Length: 179
Image 1 (cartoon, rainbow, N blue to C red):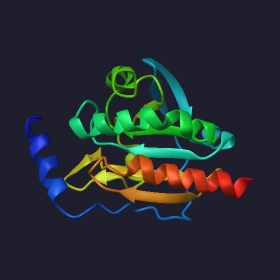
Image 2 (cartoon, rainbow, N blue to C red):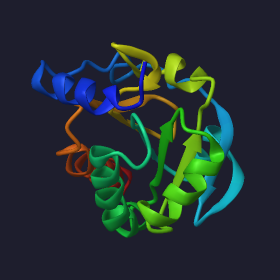
Image 3 (cartoon, helix red, strand yellow):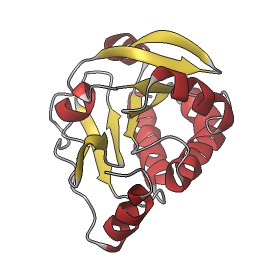
Image 4 (cartoon, rainbow, N blue to C red):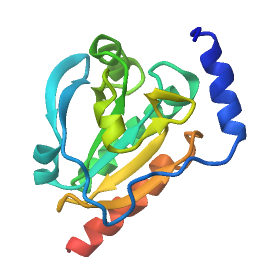
């Protein structure tokens, strides 16, 4: 498939019904380790380590530097300080390579949160977050994973709208329940 076809396909998908996250609240979140980037620097990310510190907002996005993914990254960047204050870690995942995500972590994520490379789509498959018409690419799905490793919330929509607000509300509820 030509790269120029991707915007057209994404546009058609946005016009269709909302995607459905396969993992539901109460399901065990698959553990994973992968290479990630924050502030242009690569590091090893382990979900289990992040969960030991608090809830994790795990969001999947189709492709770095595309319009919707850049909008969503900017919104998560603006909200990261609030997520962190509530004890939550934010991490985005796509099937982009680490070199691309190093740049994306600076330019779109504004050095605020990490983005993880999943070039073989293993994590994408484990979370059933694959884009229906391009199975190697991630759909736009956001999860909140509670510190016990269970899915607390799942939201799927190719539109970048509402992912940050919805996950923030759940993280706030988890923090309030902990008090």
